[in-house]
Amino acid sequence: MPGLRSWRRRTTSTMAAPRRYPDELRKHAIREVRATSWPIVHIAKDLGTHREALCCWVPPGRGLPRRPADHR
Image 1: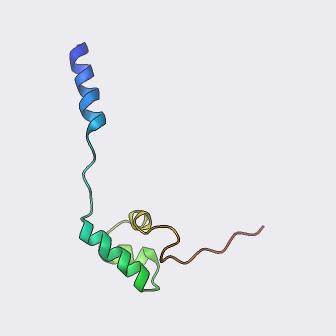
Image 2 (image 1 turned 90 degrees about the vertical axis):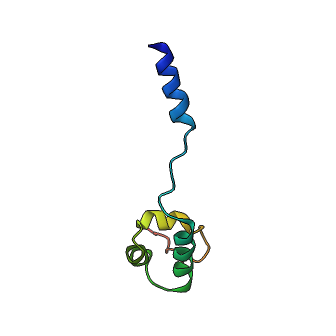
């Protein structure tokens, strides 16, 4: 049915995915990363989050040490 197909496209493309982690947890995680010298992997595990999610929350260049350049 053409009417049903167009309805599906309209509703699925405009709906945003729900946030998985609350804002308070995000703020706490960012504070932990900036305040400690622990690796992000350990902080994420302690807080029950995924390490990649925590890496996305911390703005680049703010509070994270830079990795050395790979010289070949």
